[in-house]
Image (tube, rainbow, N blue to C red; front, side):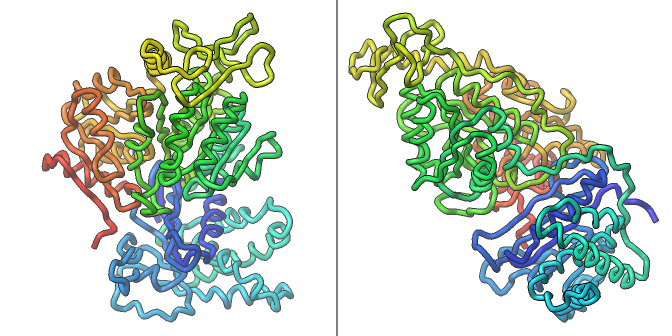
Length: 615
Protein backbone atom coordinates (compact mmCIF):
# COMPACT_ATOMS: atom_id res chain seq x y z
CA UNK A 1 0.00 0.00 0.00
CA UNK A 2 1.22 3.51 -0.86
CA UNK A 3 1.85 5.88 2.01
CA UNK A 4 0.08 9.22 2.36
CA UNK A 5 2.31 12.23 3.09
CA UNK A 6 -0.66 14.08 4.55
CA UNK A 7 -4.19 13.33 5.70
CA UNK A 8 -7.10 15.26 7.19
CA UNK A 9 -9.15 14.00 10.15
CA UNK A 10 -12.35 15.60 11.41
CA UNK A 11 -14.57 15.01 14.41
CA UNK A 12 -18.04 16.56 14.41
CA UNK A 13 -20.98 16.60 16.75
CA UNK A 14 -23.11 18.64 19.13
CA UNK A 15 -21.40 21.41 21.05
CA UNK A 16 -20.46 20.22 24.52
CA UNK A 17 -20.11 16.64 23.31
CA UNK A 18 -16.40 16.38 23.99
CA UNK A 19 -14.98 16.95 20.51
CA UNK A 20 -12.36 19.39 21.86
CA UNK A 21 -10.87 16.84 24.23
CA UNK A 22 -10.88 14.09 21.61
CA UNK A 23 -9.30 16.24 18.90
CA UNK A 24 -6.62 17.77 21.07
CA UNK A 25 -5.59 14.40 22.50
CA UNK A 26 -5.40 12.91 19.01
CA UNK A 27 -3.33 15.84 17.72
CA UNK A 28 -1.00 15.67 20.70
CA UNK A 29 -0.30 12.02 20.01
CA UNK A 30 0.50 12.70 16.36
CA UNK A 31 2.75 15.66 17.14
CA UNK A 32 4.68 13.63 19.73
CA UNK A 33 5.25 11.06 17.01
CA UNK A 34 6.97 13.67 14.83
CA UNK A 35 4.08 14.64 12.57
CA UNK A 36 3.34 18.27 11.77
CA UNK A 37 -0.11 19.50 12.75
CA UNK A 38 -2.39 22.34 11.80
CA UNK A 39 -5.84 22.22 13.42
CA UNK A 40 -8.78 24.47 14.14
CA UNK A 41 -12.34 24.39 15.41
CA UNK A 42 -15.62 25.82 14.14
CA UNK A 43 -18.41 26.27 16.66
CA UNK A 44 -21.66 28.13 17.23
CA UNK A 45 -22.12 30.97 19.67
CA UNK A 46 -24.54 29.07 21.89
CA UNK A 47 -23.27 27.09 24.87
CA UNK A 48 -24.42 23.57 24.02
CA UNK A 49 -26.23 21.59 21.38
CA UNK A 50 -25.48 23.23 18.04
CA UNK A 51 -23.14 21.65 15.54
CA UNK A 52 -19.38 22.09 15.89
CA UNK A 53 -16.36 20.35 14.40
CA UNK A 54 -12.60 20.10 14.82
CA UNK A 55 -10.33 19.48 11.84
CA UNK A 56 -6.73 18.23 12.01
CA UNK A 57 -4.40 18.35 9.02
CA UNK A 58 -1.51 16.01 9.68
CA UNK A 59 1.55 15.84 7.45
CA UNK A 60 5.21 15.01 7.33
CA UNK A 61 5.74 18.65 6.30
CA UNK A 62 4.40 21.75 8.03
CA UNK A 63 1.06 23.02 6.74
CA UNK A 64 -0.25 26.47 7.55
CA UNK A 65 -3.93 26.14 6.69
CA UNK A 66 -6.75 23.63 6.51
CA UNK A 67 -7.88 21.63 3.50
CA UNK A 68 -11.52 20.73 2.86
CA UNK A 69 -10.63 17.21 1.70
CA UNK A 70 -11.39 14.92 4.64
CA UNK A 71 -9.99 11.39 4.79
CA UNK A 72 -11.49 10.23 8.09
CA UNK A 73 -14.63 11.63 9.69
CA UNK A 74 -15.86 10.82 13.19
CA UNK A 75 -19.56 11.75 13.29
CA UNK A 76 -21.11 11.87 16.74
CA UNK A 77 -24.63 12.59 15.48
CA UNK A 78 -26.74 12.39 12.33
CA UNK A 79 -26.46 16.10 11.64
CA UNK A 80 -22.70 15.74 11.18
CA UNK A 81 -23.41 13.61 8.12
CA UNK A 82 -26.63 15.11 6.73
CA UNK A 83 -26.45 18.77 7.78
CA UNK A 84 -29.30 20.77 9.29
CA UNK A 85 -31.53 21.10 6.24
CA UNK A 86 -34.58 21.29 8.47
CA UNK A 87 -33.61 24.93 9.11
CA UNK A 88 -34.79 27.66 6.75
CA UNK A 89 -31.17 28.81 6.45
CA UNK A 90 -28.98 25.73 6.97
CA UNK A 91 -25.69 26.57 8.63
CA UNK A 92 -24.01 23.55 7.07
CA UNK A 93 -24.77 20.72 4.68
CA UNK A 94 -23.03 17.91 6.49
CA UNK A 95 -19.48 16.71 6.03
CA UNK A 96 -20.07 13.91 3.52
CA UNK A 97 -19.45 16.20 0.52
CA UNK A 98 -15.92 16.85 1.79
CA UNK A 99 -14.93 13.18 2.06
CA UNK A 100 -12.31 11.96 -0.38
CA UNK A 101 -13.12 8.80 -2.36
CA UNK A 102 -12.45 5.70 -0.25
CA UNK A 103 -12.62 7.84 2.89
CA UNK A 104 -13.72 6.40 6.22
CA UNK A 105 -16.82 7.60 8.09
CA UNK A 106 -16.93 6.45 11.72
CA UNK A 107 -20.25 6.97 13.48
CA UNK A 108 -22.11 5.74 16.54
CA UNK A 109 -23.88 2.45 15.79
CA UNK A 110 -26.64 3.51 18.19
CA UNK A 111 -27.80 6.05 15.59
CA UNK A 112 -28.99 3.15 13.32
CA UNK A 113 -28.62 5.25 10.17
CA UNK A 114 -29.70 4.23 6.67
CA UNK A 115 -27.00 5.64 4.38
CA UNK A 116 -27.95 3.76 1.25
CA UNK A 117 -29.05 6.95 -0.51
CA UNK A 118 -25.81 8.78 0.24
CA UNK A 119 -22.31 8.56 -1.14
CA UNK A 120 -21.27 4.99 -1.81
CA UNK A 121 -17.62 5.68 -2.57
CA UNK A 122 -16.73 5.90 1.15
CA UNK A 123 -16.57 3.35 3.96
CA UNK A 124 -19.40 3.73 6.51
CA UNK A 125 -18.42 2.01 9.75
CA UNK A 126 -20.88 2.08 12.65
CA UNK A 127 -18.97 1.65 15.92
CA UNK A 128 -20.80 0.65 19.12
CA UNK A 129 -19.01 3.20 21.29
CA UNK A 130 -21.03 2.51 24.44
CA UNK A 131 -20.79 -1.27 24.17
CA UNK A 132 -17.03 -1.21 23.60
CA UNK A 133 -16.44 1.11 26.54
CA UNK A 134 -18.77 -0.87 28.80
CA UNK A 135 -16.85 -4.04 28.02
CA UNK A 136 -13.53 -2.33 28.90
CA UNK A 137 -14.95 -1.06 32.20
CA UNK A 138 -16.46 -4.42 33.13
CA UNK A 139 -13.15 -6.18 32.48
CA UNK A 140 -11.46 -3.60 34.72
CA UNK A 141 -14.02 -4.17 37.48
CA UNK A 142 -15.54 -0.70 37.05
CA UNK A 143 -18.69 -1.48 35.09
CA UNK A 144 -20.88 0.40 37.58
CA UNK A 145 -19.08 3.64 36.69
CA UNK A 146 -20.18 3.66 33.04
CA UNK A 147 -22.32 6.79 33.28
CA UNK A 148 -19.61 8.71 35.10
CA UNK A 149 -16.94 7.63 32.62
CA UNK A 150 -18.98 7.72 29.42
CA UNK A 151 -16.90 10.64 28.12
CA UNK A 152 -14.20 8.01 27.50
CA UNK A 153 -16.07 6.96 24.36
CA UNK A 154 -13.95 9.73 22.83
CA UNK A 155 -10.95 7.48 23.41
CA UNK A 156 -12.76 4.66 21.60
CA UNK A 157 -13.34 7.02 18.69
CA UNK A 158 -9.69 8.11 18.78
CA UNK A 159 -8.50 4.51 18.66
CA UNK A 160 -10.78 3.77 15.73
CA UNK A 161 -9.45 6.89 13.97
CA UNK A 162 -5.88 5.75 14.49
CA UNK A 163 -6.71 2.48 12.76
CA UNK A 164 -8.40 4.29 9.86
CA UNK A 165 -5.39 6.57 9.33
CA UNK A 166 -2.83 3.83 9.70
CA UNK A 167 -1.45 5.38 12.88
CA UNK A 168 0.34 3.13 15.35
CA UNK A 169 -1.94 2.35 18.29
CA UNK A 170 0.84 2.71 20.85
CA UNK A 171 1.58 6.21 19.57
CA UNK A 172 -2.02 7.24 20.26
CA UNK A 173 -2.09 5.53 23.65
CA UNK A 174 0.94 7.54 24.77
CA UNK A 175 -1.18 10.71 24.59
CA UNK A 176 -2.89 9.63 27.83
CA UNK A 177 0.38 9.58 29.74
CA UNK A 178 1.89 12.46 31.67
CA UNK A 179 -1.27 13.81 33.22
CA UNK A 180 -1.97 14.51 36.87
CA UNK A 181 -4.83 13.80 39.25
CA UNK A 182 -7.89 12.14 37.73
CA UNK A 183 -6.36 12.20 34.25
CA UNK A 184 -3.39 10.13 35.46
CA UNK A 185 -5.69 7.72 37.27
CA UNK A 186 -7.70 7.09 34.10
CA UNK A 187 -4.73 6.86 31.70
CA UNK A 188 -4.76 3.07 31.67
CA UNK A 189 -8.51 2.83 31.10
CA UNK A 190 -8.33 5.39 28.28
CA UNK A 191 -5.56 3.37 26.63
CA UNK A 192 -7.70 0.20 26.83
CA UNK A 193 -10.71 2.05 25.40
CA UNK A 194 -8.54 3.26 22.52
CA UNK A 195 -7.37 -0.29 21.87
CA UNK A 196 -10.97 -1.50 21.76
CA UNK A 197 -11.86 1.07 19.10
CA UNK A 198 -8.68 0.38 17.16
CA UNK A 199 -9.15 -3.38 16.90
CA UNK A 200 -12.89 -3.11 16.22
CA UNK A 201 -12.29 -0.85 13.23
CA UNK A 202 -9.56 -3.10 11.82
CA UNK A 203 -12.01 -6.01 11.99
CA UNK A 204 -14.63 -4.01 10.09
CA UNK A 205 -12.09 -3.08 7.42
CA UNK A 206 -10.97 -6.71 7.25
CA UNK A 207 -7.42 -5.48 7.78
CA UNK A 208 -7.51 -3.39 4.56
CA UNK A 209 -6.73 0.14 5.71
CA UNK A 210 -7.50 2.68 2.96
CA UNK A 211 -4.89 5.11 4.25
CA UNK A 212 -1.52 4.87 5.90
CA UNK A 213 0.42 7.87 7.08
CA UNK A 214 3.98 7.94 5.83
CA UNK A 215 6.23 7.02 8.76
CA UNK A 216 8.40 9.72 10.26
CA UNK A 217 11.24 9.54 12.73
CA UNK A 218 10.15 11.05 16.06
CA UNK A 219 12.56 13.84 17.04
CA UNK A 220 14.38 13.68 20.37
CA UNK A 221 12.52 16.82 21.37
CA UNK A 222 8.94 16.74 20.05
CA UNK A 223 7.66 20.01 18.55
CA UNK A 224 5.33 22.18 20.58
CA UNK A 225 1.64 22.05 19.71
CA UNK A 226 0.50 25.54 20.60
CA UNK A 227 -2.51 27.74 20.08
CA UNK A 228 -2.41 31.35 18.88
CA UNK A 229 -4.09 32.65 22.04
CA UNK A 230 -1.40 31.06 24.19
CA UNK A 231 1.50 32.21 22.01
CA UNK A 232 0.18 35.77 22.33
CA UNK A 233 -0.04 35.54 26.11
CA UNK A 234 3.41 33.95 26.46
CA UNK A 235 5.01 36.75 24.42
CA UNK A 236 3.25 39.36 26.56
CA UNK A 237 4.62 37.77 29.70
CA UNK A 238 8.08 37.71 28.15
CA UNK A 239 7.71 41.44 27.44
CA UNK A 240 7.11 42.15 31.12
CA UNK A 241 3.35 42.65 31.08
CA UNK A 242 2.32 43.85 34.53
CA UNK A 243 -1.40 44.70 34.24
CA UNK A 244 -4.05 43.11 32.02
CA UNK A 245 -7.61 44.43 32.20
CA UNK A 246 -10.52 42.93 30.29
CA UNK A 247 -14.22 42.32 30.00
CA UNK A 248 -15.16 38.81 28.76
CA UNK A 249 -15.92 38.67 25.04
CA UNK A 250 -15.38 36.08 22.36
CA UNK A 251 -12.84 35.39 20.91
CA UNK A 252 -10.55 37.36 23.26
CA UNK A 253 -11.56 35.56 26.44
CA UNK A 254 -9.26 32.56 25.99
CA UNK A 255 -6.18 34.78 26.01
CA UNK A 256 -7.39 36.60 29.12
CA UNK A 257 -8.18 33.36 30.95
CA UNK A 258 -4.74 31.94 30.13
CA UNK A 259 -3.11 35.06 31.60
CA UNK A 260 -5.30 34.75 34.71
CA UNK A 261 -4.18 31.16 35.17
CA UNK A 262 -0.53 32.19 35.06
CA UNK A 263 -0.79 35.57 36.81
CA UNK A 264 0.62 34.56 40.18
CA UNK A 265 3.70 32.88 38.68
CA UNK A 266 4.60 36.01 36.72
CA UNK A 267 3.70 38.74 39.23
CA UNK A 268 0.92 39.85 36.89
CA UNK A 269 -2.30 41.65 37.83
CA UNK A 270 -5.27 40.52 35.73
CA UNK A 271 -8.56 42.32 36.41
CA UNK A 272 -11.95 41.42 34.98
CA UNK A 273 -13.80 44.73 35.05
CA UNK A 274 -17.42 45.77 34.60
CA UNK A 275 -17.18 46.83 30.95
CA UNK A 276 -14.75 47.74 28.17
CA UNK A 277 -14.73 51.43 29.10
CA UNK A 278 -13.36 50.50 32.51
CA UNK A 279 -10.89 48.10 30.85
CA UNK A 280 -9.27 50.74 28.63
CA UNK A 281 -9.23 53.40 31.34
CA UNK A 282 -7.62 51.04 33.83
CA UNK A 283 -4.98 50.09 31.23
CA UNK A 284 -4.23 53.75 30.46
CA UNK A 285 -3.92 54.51 34.16
CA UNK A 286 -1.57 51.58 34.67
CA UNK A 287 0.60 52.80 31.78
CA UNK A 288 0.85 56.26 33.35
CA UNK A 289 1.84 54.59 36.61
CA UNK A 290 4.81 53.00 34.86
CA UNK A 291 3.45 49.48 34.35
CA UNK A 292 3.40 47.69 31.03
CA UNK A 293 -0.32 47.27 30.46
CA UNK A 294 -2.70 45.84 27.91
CA UNK A 295 -6.29 44.91 27.32
CA UNK A 296 -7.78 42.34 24.96
CA UNK A 297 -11.18 42.55 23.31
CA UNK A 298 -13.04 42.10 20.04
CA UNK A 299 -14.90 44.49 17.74
CA UNK A 300 -17.93 45.37 19.91
CA UNK A 301 -15.71 45.89 22.94
CA UNK A 302 -13.19 47.93 20.99
CA UNK A 303 -15.99 50.29 19.93
CA UNK A 304 -16.40 51.20 23.60
CA UNK A 305 -12.67 51.76 23.99
CA UNK A 306 -12.08 54.34 21.28
CA UNK A 307 -12.44 57.39 23.55
CA UNK A 308 -9.86 55.76 25.80
CA UNK A 309 -7.56 55.48 22.79
CA UNK A 310 -7.69 59.24 22.35
CA UNK A 311 -7.20 59.69 26.10
CA UNK A 312 -4.00 57.64 25.92
CA UNK A 313 -2.66 59.41 22.84
CA UNK A 314 -3.38 62.97 24.03
CA UNK A 315 -1.82 62.35 27.44
CA UNK A 316 1.13 60.56 25.76
CA UNK A 317 0.85 57.47 27.91
CA UNK A 318 3.37 54.71 27.15
CA UNK A 319 0.60 52.44 25.91
CA UNK A 320 -1.51 50.57 26.55
CA UNK A 321 -1.37 47.82 23.96
CA UNK A 322 -4.80 46.74 22.75
CA UNK A 323 -5.22 43.25 21.33
CA UNK A 324 -8.19 43.32 18.96
CA UNK A 325 -9.43 39.79 18.24
CA UNK A 326 -11.62 40.18 15.16
CA UNK A 327 -14.83 38.24 14.67
CA UNK A 328 -17.80 38.43 12.28
CA UNK A 329 -19.60 41.76 12.51
CA UNK A 330 -21.23 44.23 12.58
CA UNK A 331 -22.83 44.47 16.02
CA UNK A 332 -22.99 41.04 17.67
CA UNK A 333 -22.70 39.54 14.19
CA UNK A 334 -21.05 36.11 14.24
CA UNK A 335 -19.53 36.04 17.74
CA UNK A 336 -17.58 32.78 17.39
CA UNK A 337 -16.59 33.06 13.73
CA UNK A 338 -13.60 34.69 12.09
CA UNK A 339 -13.33 37.80 9.93
CA UNK A 340 -10.86 40.52 8.92
CA UNK A 341 -13.31 43.39 8.85
CA UNK A 342 -11.99 45.58 11.71
CA UNK A 343 -9.06 47.10 9.86
CA UNK A 344 -10.86 50.39 9.27
CA UNK A 345 -11.99 50.41 12.90
CA UNK A 346 -8.43 49.93 14.13
CA UNK A 347 -7.04 52.61 11.81
CA UNK A 348 -9.67 55.23 12.69
CA UNK A 349 -10.30 54.43 16.34
CA UNK A 350 -11.58 57.71 17.70
CA UNK A 351 -12.36 61.31 16.91
CA UNK A 352 -9.75 63.85 15.99
CA UNK A 353 -6.22 63.23 14.73
CA UNK A 354 -3.98 61.32 17.11
CA UNK A 355 -1.09 58.90 16.76
CA UNK A 356 -1.31 55.17 17.30
CA UNK A 357 0.37 52.15 15.73
CA UNK A 358 -1.48 49.20 14.16
CA UNK A 359 0.26 45.90 13.49
CA UNK A 360 -1.15 42.59 12.20
CA UNK A 361 0.82 39.36 12.70
CA UNK A 362 0.14 36.48 10.32
CA UNK A 363 1.50 33.33 11.96
CA UNK A 364 2.76 32.01 15.29
CA UNK A 365 6.29 33.37 14.83
CA UNK A 366 4.97 36.82 14.01
CA UNK A 367 2.47 36.66 16.86
CA UNK A 368 5.35 36.22 19.29
CA UNK A 369 7.48 38.94 17.64
CA UNK A 370 4.68 41.49 17.51
CA UNK A 371 3.05 40.71 20.86
CA UNK A 372 6.45 41.25 22.47
CA UNK A 373 7.84 44.23 20.61
CA UNK A 374 4.67 46.34 20.60
CA UNK A 375 5.37 47.04 24.26
CA UNK A 376 8.74 48.48 23.28
CA UNK A 377 7.01 50.67 20.72
CA UNK A 378 4.39 51.83 23.23
CA UNK A 379 7.12 52.83 25.70
CA UNK A 380 9.47 54.32 23.10
CA UNK A 381 6.89 56.46 21.28
CA UNK A 382 4.47 57.02 24.19
CA UNK A 383 1.28 56.13 22.36
CA UNK A 384 -1.29 53.32 22.18
CA UNK A 385 -0.65 50.32 19.94
CA UNK A 386 -3.25 47.99 18.40
CA UNK A 387 -2.40 44.37 17.60
CA UNK A 388 -4.95 43.24 15.02
CA UNK A 389 -5.61 39.50 15.12
CA UNK A 390 -8.66 37.26 14.71
CA UNK A 391 -10.50 34.16 15.82
CA UNK A 392 -8.78 31.90 13.28
CA UNK A 393 -5.28 32.76 14.39
CA UNK A 394 -6.31 32.55 18.05
CA UNK A 395 -8.03 29.15 18.13
CA UNK A 396 -5.75 27.36 15.65
CA UNK A 397 -3.18 24.91 17.01
CA UNK A 398 0.06 24.38 15.12
CA UNK A 399 3.30 22.48 15.65
CA UNK A 400 6.36 24.69 16.04
CA UNK A 401 9.93 23.76 16.92
CA UNK A 402 10.73 27.05 18.61
CA UNK A 403 8.76 30.17 19.49
CA UNK A 404 11.88 32.29 19.11
CA UNK A 405 11.69 33.81 22.58
CA UNK A 406 15.50 33.83 22.87
CA UNK A 407 15.82 35.86 19.67
CA UNK A 408 13.63 38.75 20.75
CA UNK A 409 15.26 42.18 21.17
CA UNK A 410 15.97 43.65 24.62
CA UNK A 411 13.18 45.36 26.53
CA UNK A 412 13.18 49.11 25.83
CA UNK A 413 11.26 51.30 28.29
CA UNK A 414 11.90 54.52 26.37
CA UNK A 415 13.16 57.89 27.57
CA UNK A 416 12.81 58.54 31.31
CA UNK A 417 13.11 61.80 33.24
CA UNK A 418 16.35 62.32 35.11
CA UNK A 419 15.81 64.79 37.98
CA UNK A 420 17.37 68.10 36.99
CA UNK A 421 15.16 70.83 38.36
CA UNK A 422 11.94 71.97 36.73
CA UNK A 423 10.10 69.08 35.06
CA UNK A 424 8.02 69.54 31.91
CA UNK A 425 6.16 66.32 31.14
CA UNK A 426 5.22 67.43 27.61
CA UNK A 427 8.45 69.22 26.79
CA UNK A 428 9.04 70.01 23.12
CA UNK A 429 12.03 67.99 21.90
CA UNK A 430 13.71 67.33 18.57
CA UNK A 431 12.20 63.83 18.39
CA UNK A 432 8.79 64.77 19.77
CA UNK A 433 9.30 62.33 22.65
CA UNK A 434 9.33 63.93 26.10
CA UNK A 435 11.10 62.17 28.99
CA UNK A 436 8.47 60.67 31.26
CA UNK A 437 8.34 60.36 35.00
CA UNK A 438 6.46 57.82 37.04
CA UNK A 439 4.44 58.57 40.18
CA UNK A 440 6.63 58.84 43.26
CA UNK A 441 9.75 59.80 41.36
CA UNK A 442 11.55 62.73 43.06
CA UNK A 443 11.08 65.94 41.10
CA UNK A 444 8.75 64.25 38.64
CA UNK A 445 5.40 65.77 39.56
CA UNK A 446 3.29 66.57 36.48
CA UNK A 447 -0.24 67.38 35.40
CA UNK A 448 -2.12 65.25 32.89
CA UNK A 449 -5.42 66.20 31.30
CA UNK A 450 -7.54 65.14 28.35
CA UNK A 451 -7.87 68.80 27.31
CA UNK A 452 -5.23 70.34 25.10
CA UNK A 453 -2.35 71.42 27.32
CA UNK A 454 1.04 73.07 27.39
CA UNK A 455 4.44 71.57 28.18
CA UNK A 456 3.67 71.57 31.90
CA UNK A 457 0.33 69.83 31.38
CA UNK A 458 -1.84 72.86 32.12
CA UNK A 459 -4.95 73.38 30.00
CA UNK A 460 -4.62 75.98 27.27
CA UNK A 461 -6.41 76.88 24.04
CA UNK A 462 -3.51 78.90 22.64
CA UNK A 463 -3.37 78.56 18.85
CA UNK A 464 0.45 78.58 18.82
CA UNK A 465 0.61 75.85 21.47
CA UNK A 466 -2.03 73.83 19.62
CA UNK A 467 0.04 73.85 16.43
CA UNK A 468 3.19 72.76 18.24
CA UNK A 469 1.49 70.05 20.30
CA UNK A 470 -0.26 68.55 17.28
CA UNK A 471 3.00 68.48 15.33
CA UNK A 472 4.74 66.94 18.34
CA UNK A 473 2.22 64.12 18.76
CA UNK A 474 1.61 63.31 15.10
CA UNK A 475 5.33 63.45 14.37
CA UNK A 476 5.72 60.26 16.39
CA UNK A 477 4.31 58.31 13.45
CA UNK A 478 7.01 59.66 11.14
CA UNK A 479 9.63 58.75 13.73
CA UNK A 480 8.22 55.23 14.06
CA UNK A 481 8.11 54.84 10.27
CA UNK A 482 11.81 55.70 10.08
CA UNK A 483 12.90 53.51 13.00
CA UNK A 484 10.84 50.34 12.58
CA UNK A 485 12.81 47.97 10.29
CA UNK A 486 11.42 47.16 6.86
CA UNK A 487 11.31 43.46 7.80
CA UNK A 488 8.72 44.29 10.45
CA UNK A 489 6.65 46.37 8.06
CA UNK A 490 6.21 43.89 5.22
CA UNK A 491 7.23 40.33 4.32
CA UNK A 492 7.80 39.19 0.75
CA UNK A 493 7.66 35.56 -0.37
CA UNK A 494 8.32 33.93 -3.73
CA UNK A 495 10.05 34.93 -6.99
CA UNK A 496 10.15 38.59 -7.97
CA UNK A 497 9.14 37.83 -11.58
CA UNK A 498 5.98 35.89 -10.72
CA UNK A 499 2.89 35.73 -12.93
CA UNK A 500 0.72 36.87 -10.04
CA UNK A 501 1.35 39.00 -6.96
CA UNK A 502 -0.94 38.35 -4.02
CA UNK A 503 -1.20 40.96 -1.28
CA UNK A 504 -2.73 40.21 2.10
CA UNK A 505 -2.49 40.72 5.83
CA UNK A 506 -3.05 38.88 9.07
CA UNK A 507 -4.27 35.30 9.21
CA UNK A 508 -4.65 34.83 5.45
CA UNK A 509 -0.84 34.51 5.41
CA UNK A 510 -0.77 30.76 5.96
CA UNK A 511 -3.55 30.10 3.46
CA UNK A 512 -1.77 32.14 0.78
CA UNK A 513 1.62 30.50 1.38
CA UNK A 514 0.19 26.99 1.14
CA UNK A 515 -1.89 27.82 -1.94
CA UNK A 516 0.92 29.48 -3.88
CA UNK A 517 3.13 26.39 -3.51
CA UNK A 518 0.40 24.10 -4.86
CA UNK A 519 -0.52 26.43 -7.72
CA UNK A 520 3.01 26.51 -9.06
CA UNK A 521 3.47 22.77 -8.67
CA UNK A 522 0.11 21.65 -10.11
CA UNK A 523 -1.02 24.50 -12.34
CA UNK A 524 2.17 26.19 -13.47
CA UNK A 525 1.13 29.61 -12.11
CA UNK A 526 4.09 31.30 -10.44
CA UNK A 527 2.89 33.36 -7.47
CA UNK A 528 4.56 35.72 -5.03
CA UNK A 529 3.09 37.24 -1.92
CA UNK A 530 3.38 40.61 -0.21
CA UNK A 531 2.24 40.47 3.41
CA UNK A 532 1.59 43.85 5.00
CA UNK A 533 2.41 43.58 8.71
CA UNK A 534 2.52 47.25 9.76
CA UNK A 535 -0.70 49.04 8.86
CA UNK A 536 -0.14 52.35 10.66
CA UNK A 537 2.13 54.09 9.89
CA UNK A 538 1.64 52.54 6.49
CA UNK A 539 4.80 51.30 4.67
CA UNK A 540 4.18 53.32 1.52
CA UNK A 541 7.61 52.88 -0.07
CA UNK A 542 7.86 49.15 0.53
CA UNK A 543 4.35 48.38 -0.75
CA UNK A 544 4.60 50.68 -3.74
CA UNK A 545 7.91 49.15 -4.84
CA UNK A 546 6.45 45.63 -4.97
CA UNK A 547 3.12 46.50 -6.57
CA UNK A 548 4.59 48.78 -9.27
CA UNK A 549 6.66 45.92 -10.68
CA UNK A 550 3.92 43.28 -10.41
CA UNK A 551 2.37 41.85 -13.58
CA UNK A 552 -1.03 41.22 -12.03
CA UNK A 553 -2.21 41.80 -8.47
CA UNK A 554 -4.87 40.22 -6.26
CA UNK A 555 -5.74 41.30 -2.71
CA UNK A 556 -6.93 38.41 -0.53
CA UNK A 557 -9.08 39.37 2.45
CA UNK A 558 -11.71 37.89 4.73
CA UNK A 559 -14.08 40.85 4.62
CA UNK A 560 -16.77 42.13 2.28
CA UNK A 561 -15.18 45.21 0.79
CA UNK A 562 -11.45 44.55 0.61
CA UNK A 563 -10.33 47.01 3.28
CA UNK A 564 -6.59 46.54 2.72
CA UNK A 565 -7.03 47.08 -1.02
CA UNK A 566 -8.77 50.39 -0.23
CA UNK A 567 -5.97 51.36 2.16
CA UNK A 568 -3.30 50.57 -0.42
CA UNK A 569 -5.00 52.74 -3.01
CA UNK A 570 -5.42 55.55 -0.48
CA UNK A 571 -1.78 55.46 0.62
CA UNK A 572 0.04 54.60 -2.63
CA UNK A 573 -2.27 55.45 -5.49
CA UNK A 574 -1.96 51.85 -6.73
CA UNK A 575 -5.21 49.97 -7.39
CA UNK A 576 -4.95 46.18 -7.21
CA UNK A 577 -6.36 44.39 -10.25
CA UNK A 578 -8.65 41.99 -8.35
CA UNK A 579 -10.04 41.43 -4.88
CA UNK A 580 -10.62 37.88 -3.63
CA UNK A 581 -12.90 38.11 -0.62
CA UNK A 582 -14.68 35.74 1.76
CA UNK A 583 -17.08 36.86 4.45
CA UNK A 584 -19.10 33.85 5.59
CA UNK A 585 -17.35 33.86 8.97
CA UNK A 586 -15.06 30.96 8.12
CA UNK A 587 -11.44 31.27 6.99
CA UNK A 588 -10.29 30.50 3.46
CA UNK A 589 -9.65 26.82 2.92
CA UNK A 590 -6.78 25.92 0.61
CA UNK A 591 -9.28 24.89 -2.08
CA UNK A 592 -11.32 28.09 -1.82
CA UNK A 593 -8.26 30.28 -2.11
CA UNK A 594 -6.87 28.41 -5.10
CA UNK A 595 -10.27 28.73 -6.80
CA UNK A 596 -10.40 32.46 -6.11
CA UNK A 597 -6.88 33.05 -7.45
CA UNK A 598 -7.52 30.96 -10.59
CA UNK A 599 -10.71 32.87 -11.29
CA UNK A 600 -9.01 36.22 -10.81
CA UNK A 601 -6.16 35.28 -13.14
CA UNK A 602 -8.04 33.46 -15.90
CA UNK A 603 -11.25 35.48 -16.00
CA UNK A 604 -9.85 38.84 -14.93
CA UNK A 605 -12.73 39.48 -12.55
CA UNK A 606 -12.22 42.60 -10.39
CA UNK A 607 -14.02 40.97 -7.44
CA UNK A 608 -14.16 37.26 -6.69
CA UNK A 609 -16.32 35.94 -3.83
CA UNK A 610 -15.95 32.34 -2.64
CA UNK A 611 -17.64 30.14 -0.07
CA UNK A 612 -17.80 26.37 -0.38
CA UNK A 613 -20.38 26.30 2.39
CA UNK A 614 -22.97 27.48 -0.12
CA UNK A 615 -24.99 24.73 -1.90
